[in-house]
Length: 211
Image (cartoon, rainbow, N blue to C red; front, side, top):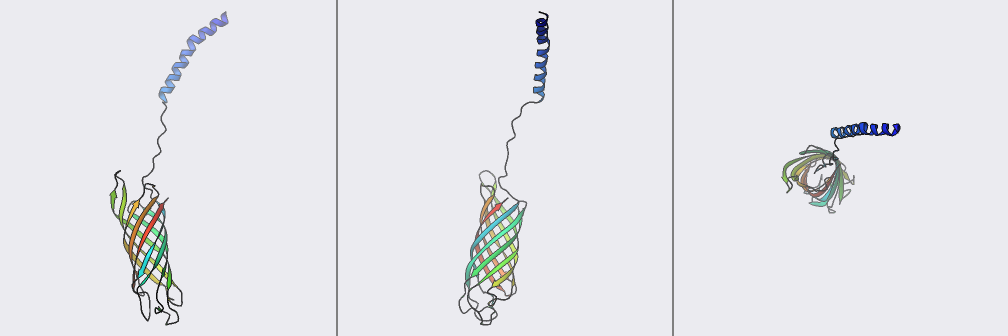
C-alpha cells in the first residue's frame, strides 16, 4: 500500500512538471519548414561555346596572280568566363576551309594552286550592349558586340607559307533559354588579315553552355 501511495504521489507531482518543461522547450525551438532551394534564372561563370557557319574572303592572300572571291565554312570552339552580366573573356580555336579555283596560286609562285584552309588560336572579348526582358522580367535577350585577335596558320604550306594576324569584330544577338545553362545566338563578323590585307566576313549561329 505504501508503495502504491508513493507511486501515486510521484505521478501527481512529477508528471505535470515534465509536461510543462517539454512544452517550454518546444516553444523555444519551434519546428520550421525547410527553406526552399532557389536557382539563378541565368547561369553565368565559366562557359563553353561552339559556333559554325559560312565564311567568305573577298581577296585571299596572294603575292601574284588572281585573288578571287572565296567562299567556305568555319567552325570555332571557345572556353571563357563571364565577368558579370555584361562582359565575357574567352580563348578560341577556329578552323576554316575555303574554295579557290586553279588560277589561285597564293604565295607559291605557281608551285601550288586551289583550295586552302586555316587554323587560328586566339582571344576574344564580348560586351552585352542592350538587354530585353521577357514576361517574367528576366533579361534573356541581348544585343552584343564581339571582337578578337588570333594567329592564323594556313595549309597547304606550299600555297600559303606565311602565318598572319587575324582581327575580327561584329554584332550578335543571344537568347538565354529557360534551361538556365544554355544560350543560343547568331553572330555576323568582319575580319581582316593584317599582313596580307585580306578582308572577310562570316555568319555563325552559336550554342553556349555556362557551368
